[in-house]
Length: 132
Image (cartoon, rainbow, N blue to C red; front, side):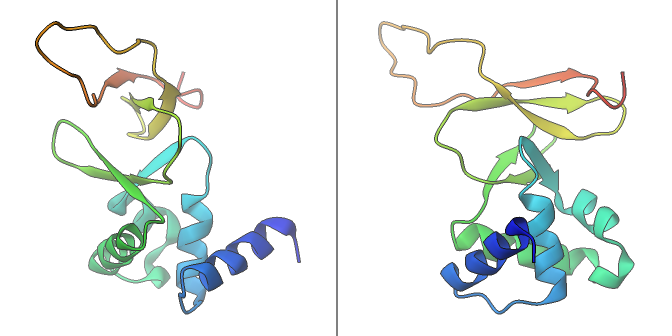
C-alpha cells in the first residue's frame, strides 16, 4: 500500500467514517493540494458510477460538518470545498476550465480607523497553468 492510501485510511478512522470506495475516491480528490472543488466538478471527475449529484452534495456537507472541509463561496453563490489551512489564502478562478485554485494572499490586512477587519474573500480571474 502506498503512503497516501494509508493516510486516507487513517483519516476515515479519525473521522469515525465507514470507508467505501466512493468516499475513498472523494477524499483522495479533496486532498489535491491548493485546489478547491465544486460538487459538480467532483461528480463529473469521479464518474457516474460514483452516484448522482445529490449524493456528492450530501457527502461534501457531511465531511464539512465533521471539520474535514471548509467552503469557499464565490460571487455567483457556488460553493467550493477545500481542506482547512492555517494560512490565509485567496483564490484564482480559471476562466476556461472553471477550476478554483488556492493562491497566497497578496495584501496585508488594511488598517481602518473605525472598522476591525476580520476576514476578506478575494477571487482573481485568469487562466490556470493547464489552460494558458
